[in-house]
Length: 112
Image (cartoon, rainbow, N blue to C red; front, side):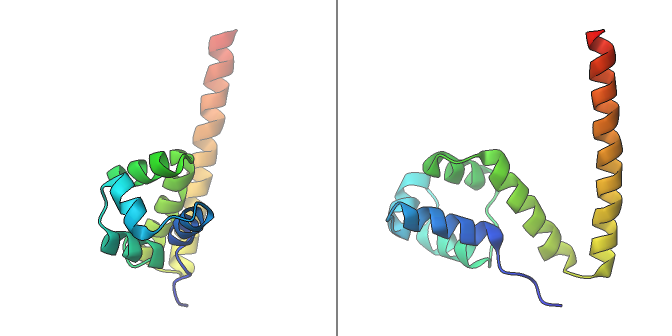
């Protein structure tokens, strides 16, 4: 199966177009060069976390939301779209669900 289109790149392109900004304008506002921004929008590169922060600040959007998209894309780029990746994500989901439940339980006990 082929990799899906870059959700983060598409999201950034949509933000830029909604503001009627050029790549050059975003480049000046984020200190990220235009060719790199173009590659990020096309899904050929992922921004660093520092670049992601500058982009979220520039567009005034949630850095956390962008980090979620970044993390998902990193997993897909590193491991591909296949059954093994799917199974691994299911396992991580179970582990995180248990972690969140234990955190909620600990918070409730602390409050009482």
